[in-house]
Image (cartoon, rainbow over all chains, first blue to last red; front, side, top):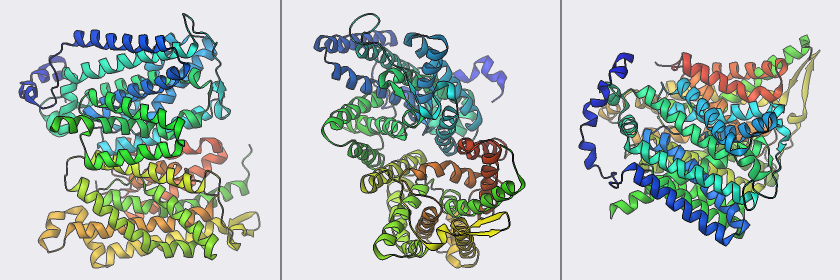
Length: 338
Length: 292
């Protein structure tokens, strides 16, 4: 792809944008983006209203995790589902977000609403950097590199004593939130906002020229490149966007857990859960990860209380393997087939 | 830390010996990835499963760990052929998405790890044989048999595998299936059958590699994960599917890791493999001995 072509915008008028994709089965609705945003904010407000009315701390604790996975699964899907590049290093971006909060708290005493965007920037840059190094190669190398990236970031954090190093770090929060209610209610609200943003972004990307470019890359990268889709740039946008959203999901984590150490922040189960949720829900639309995350994370939250957490993880693994084998298009695919 | 001469020599020896073991651990993944186009990310975890099986054989029947690994190879071979059959049926035959195959192995890896945690807990496990605790001393130079025995075993295994690929009919068919499965069909061999055998062999190598793991270091369900970065760095750096390349890459990685341990610090060593991997991907994606 010559840089000149990108500037002229000719590729935007390439034949892949002529409209035959409009008849595709994955075109779900006719809603304009602003209407969807209004609806998403409405749903989020109702969710928060009901939760605040019930005002049970456990509900906020559990709901926070569910929403965190909505963010992670939607973010992962922007790269993994739309573009077809599998990121196995979810925990790296997630933990980078968490440790951005720790670093900014320690250095500048910044509050969470400021560290969440900062985490997005840092994790987004990590995403772009990694994409730049690996995306020129076959997708499979990218997947392996992301898994190794999780190990190397963990090594860096473990050796960085400023943010606690291998011993971990305590980040105690006050009992009350800064505005109203308990602190966990405040964390829940922040994660609800981030989740709403993630879903809106995932849907907007899917329906914009970005999304069509991503799909072209997933279906046939060589053909996409040949018809003038700027594949490398688009992939960098995807890695950056996906990484940034994952970082935002991780930013409130230090306050949620109160004690953060590398081994728990970089836990592989974040990656497995995220990938399982997106794949079980269905990776081709924004709706899949949302359904998968809400369903699976809720079941997990109930199961952690009632049965052992190892069995809980086992169930996720078995579901992931089962779905990729038997239902490649996930729950959304199963529903559409009717 | 001052780096003395004996320290340096011992680091080189340890690196060399560990490198041999890394080669044994990586060769199965390299065959699957390079020759069969199956990205078995769960390979190191299969080796850990093998290590636990060796542990059980050792505890129950007092069988030597390496002999135990050897006894397990037929079991792992059969499991590998079965697994390939499943993989072929659900992923290869559809031919649409290599990524789903990767997610499949990623899920398997996770399942294996969780099952091991449920069965054995997260405590470190050991085996006891005379050679694990013996160290031969030549002046200031130490040669721990804990590393030397797996090193010798690894090299032997690699030589056998190389002879299998170069000299036997089936082995050459495996190489042929990587080059042109259609042409292989024309001469009357079934690519699926050949790949099934090759994947079985790759999995069988994990049983032996598992025996080496438990001889070299204490065993814990999650150690497989620590090896993934190394294994794929070696696969890529050595050139996919090339056995001599795998050995050279593995020994280089062992040396670099151990030298960086004494010069930079042990807590940084996990980053070394990734550095090697990224550098290779950026500058020479086909590896040292790769067919570009």
